[in-house]
Length: 132
Image (cartoon, rainbow, N blue to C red):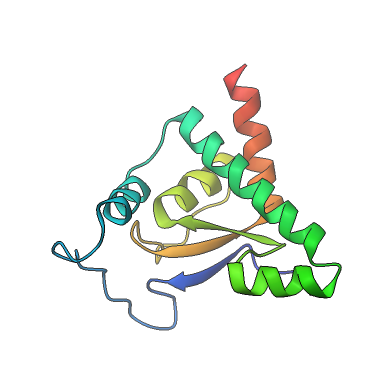
């Protein structure tokens, strides 16, 4: 059985209603709030390419580590996945659009998702060609 193109970490799904993430009203650190804000806005070609490329390399490193016990343990505690990359709803929409996959209606900008590595690599390839 093929692995799904995406997995939902946080946000609505087709089987349940999601609740939007409220701002933390100053409780989150400045860097955390900045990171969340950066995930909500679409990136230009270069920005999206950079994000996907970095996360692809992280997943590839997790895949190399997953062949031995210590690496599997490291992946478990670090949250790194060998077959998926973490993305926000905004970046998921951009990546799926790049490879010609229609984005499901339940994907929200503030949601947290995982995109299958091969789909992300295809998006990187297409974005790299557009850049030239």
